[in-house]
Image 1 (tube, rainbow, N blue to C red):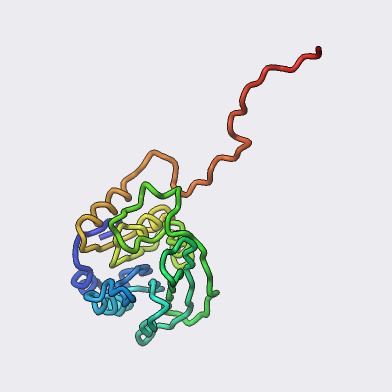
Image 2: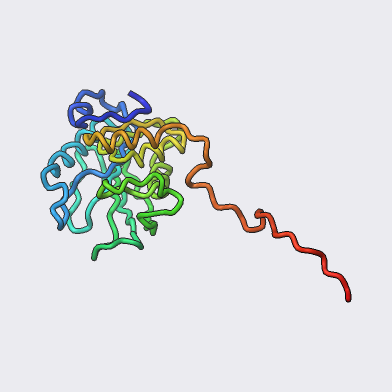
Length: 221
């Protein structure tokens, strides 16, 4: 089950996995919010995090609300970092989210702050307006790079539109995702297809590389 996204509930799939069959889990589970978003699936999010900890070898990294205390790591795991994602283009009164890291080894990690807009002009073609909490690809690339190595298997049990999986693929990791919403799963599958165009994260061309306008040589009068 490598390098794919499945349109299914994650809990039965994770339950059937062998222990330590995943290297790293990076996900955005449903959690309580002031608007009541994901209220019905909040318990599933907690359950999935603890199930994932039984299957992962290295890290479980997940987004969480700053208004609610994050779940504590299970026995044998340690809360090693709390990062902050600042959203400069956020439209609500709280313009940041927490990124919590559980690790098997107790090594305090640098607590980072990423100030990255939700919408990036370089990735607009990969944006699904129907998804309420899609994350920017650049942010997930940073997280995947910090918490995994080339060849690792990265699991996202709440894959949504597949941003974690796209980041893993770009950084030469294997990936596995689950998403219950059929539309989002299909959208993620499309994003993971090979493309001939330049990478979305490629830097814009330098102005010195652009063709200069041709002008007639000046002559003395």
